[in-house]
Length: 104
Image (cartoon, rainbow, N blue to C red; front, top):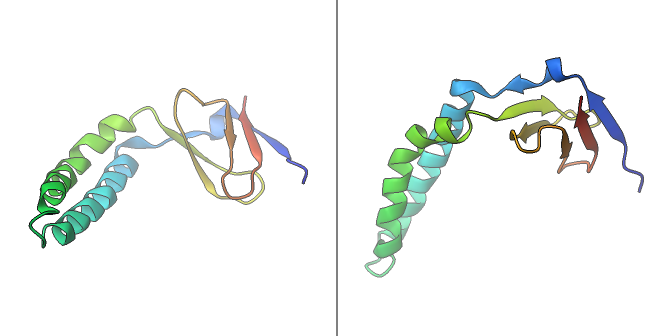
């Protein structure tokens, strides 16, 4: 299988921004609260469930700070979204099609 490389222009790389990070935090918070509530139905697993609920409440507040330096771009082959951090801004391998995307 031959891996293809796509080179993207740095101007096409978009910053994730506050709205995207807040939405990601809301999704993670909702999932943490639901899983924590389901685990809290039993007495033994409530030890794990209550901290998950607390983490779910704080997830929308913490997520914009975690992803403030994140960027996203489209894969050159399959057009899937790639979330890239500042530490790996210049190369990213697509998980869907295993294509190497380079930013220059």
